[in-house]
Amino acid sequence: MSTKNLPRLALLAAVGALLAIPNAVLAQNTSKEEGTAQAQGSASQGKTTKSAEARKAARERRAQRRADRQLLAWSNAAARETLTPMLGAQKANAKKADPSVRLLEGRLLEQEGALDAALQAFQAAADLAPQHPEPHLRLASAHQRAEQSGPAQTHLRAALDHATAWCEREPENAEAFYSLGQAYQGLGRLPKAVGAYQQALELDPALALPAYYLGTAYYQQEKWDAALAALNQAITHNDHLAYAYFFRGLTQGKVKQTAAMLNDLDHFIAMAPTAPEAETARTILAALR
Image 1 (cartoon, rainbow, N blue to C red):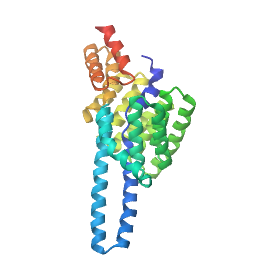
Image 2 (cartoon, helix red, strand yellow):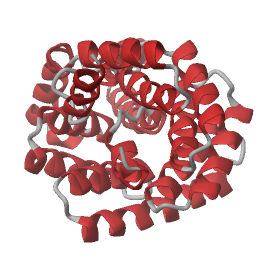
Image 3 (tube, rainbow, N blue to C red):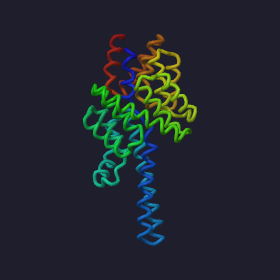
Image 4 (tube, one colour):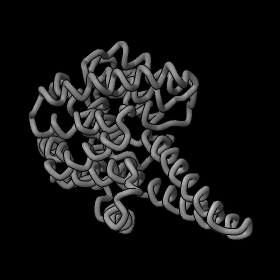
């Protein structure tokens, strides 16, 4: 498998760092609604509204995290079931549109192969959260999948600008550096990507996705031992990260760990049988058996 294709593949894999920002947007929306309720009603009514809104927001955040985990594991049917009520609520009240929900929708559509619809969902998220890098990273992913390199590069550069500004605003935020690494990796600036992922992991060593992407960046640099160590770390923190098994299997093949490679590629296919790289995994397995 050519390492030249890894920037595209890396962007196609699941990404989970955005949830913190849309949750902040949710909190802002909730505060506005609570303020209106308190102005119109009595103090007790205001407290009741505040409590109800807080419980609703907490339920929505839990559902978003569940959908995120399902998408990372390539459990598309389960993710659609989780997302359907949220999408219905957004269509019923466009004023409460949440960029995190649109991003989750776009990720699901992309994984289902509906690229045009995915692009629309990602663009809607970008319109709702114009200063956040994640919508641009996802737009780049979908454009790369559609073999539209020009728009993909445009969105990667936008993601880099937004991620850089985010890191400057919040230098202790691991997710900011994780997003910065993704932008650098998509643009092929691998040493910069590695540095950003390492910074993210220094800030929060328990995050699985920076470790996963660090492993893919090392893979692109043909640093097999470092790639294997990072991918092992990612799987330790999240053993439902489908693409980590794919790239760990490829890496194991590079260091002649054939039995382990076969096991990981089998595991990847079982988790993500319709993923774009599943056919690559099947081809490798067929050649070795």
